[in-house]
Image 1 (cartoon, one colour):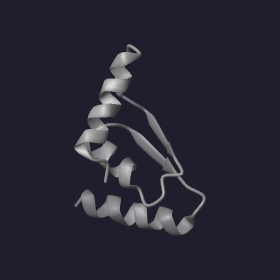
Image 2 (cartoon, one colour):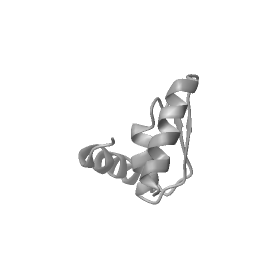
Image 3 (cartoon, one colour):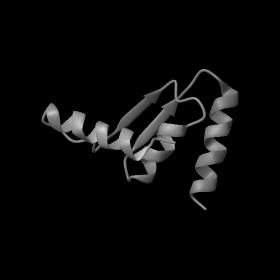
Image 4 (spheres, helix red, strand yellow):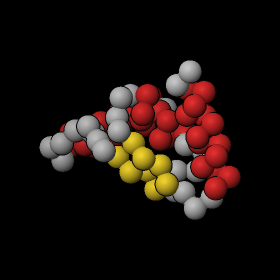
Length: 68
């Protein structure tokens, strides 16, 4: 899961370049969706892409559990 500190760094980095992380966000090589799911929980529009169908299945299952 994306930690609170990592999320804070992401917001700070975006502010440094004069923008916000309002999305949409593309998470390349998302693996099991650790960052993708946390960003989506923050209300951002996120798409995760990975070459591994296994990881994508894990990410989808985790996302489905988060939405219930």
